[in-house]
Amino acid sequence: QEEVYHKTLLPLITDTLNGFEATCFAYGQTGTGKTYTMEGDITSTNNQGVIPRAVQSIFANLSQIHQVDLTYSVSVTYLEIYNEELGDLFLGVGAPESRVPTRPPKLMILDDRVGATTGKPADGAASKRIYCRGLNEIKVQSVEDVLSALEKAQERRRVSEA
Image (tube, rainbow, N blue to C red; front, top):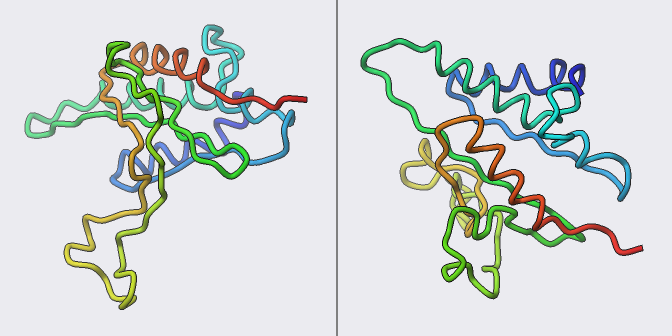
């Protein structure tokens, strides 16, 4: 896990902290180790996947920033693609049980950087992006907040039915 993290995700974290957007995802057949690579054992320092390692690195870097005029916030999302369906693994995380929807909203991946019909940049294109409409975004303030959300997300993960 550590070698995969250092060769793949660590450079993305540096770019992200310099203002670029980055995404990390695992793709492959059922049973090939995607979840193990991404999450690993989040309670074990030696066996953590790339996500917990990345989170620790991000917060360690942010704690070293001492600019008076700089503020930041950290939000996390967790999108699952299973059998070509999008799933929000953070659906209901941090919400009272009574506020969790009984039927999850339909998620859609959208690109609002260019006009759908004209192919020209949309108004304010610099602030637009590719995003998943309906995906929950959780504000976090620490590594522990993220790991707690990951633990709850693990309960929502769909797995292959053999």
